[in-house]
Image: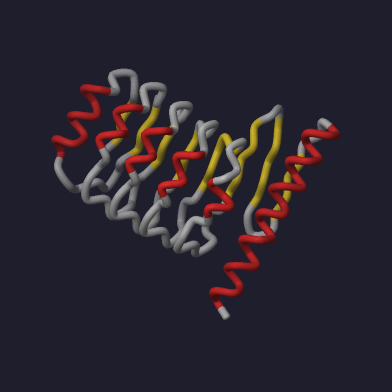
Length: 166
């Protein structure tokens, strides 16, 4: 029952995303929709808020929406991110705080437009070296990261223009 509910929830959110994008692109209006997830489209930017939905996986149908600029996945049950996260090439803001992530995929380094990332309050045991590819990153929150402090020191050395919280 719970899996089918999550499936229908994801379908409803995706429908809202596509309808919101269509309306915004064809009528130049802003749309704010809430079907246990919200989509805000404004001036060509698309934000997707799936916080607090008890998600345990992230569907490829979400990561295939390359026009998303802000993605909020906070307060869910995610243990991993799919490699397809790297397809979100226009992503500027990524919030995955308060999940159960134990690692980040190397493909996270493909998000070249990323300006702000929050990976705090997860169970991360290591950081992919590809994080150093995110030279446009302005803010990185790694609060509660308790593994090797040298990982964070190496990131600070490579991402000199990034404010890193640990």
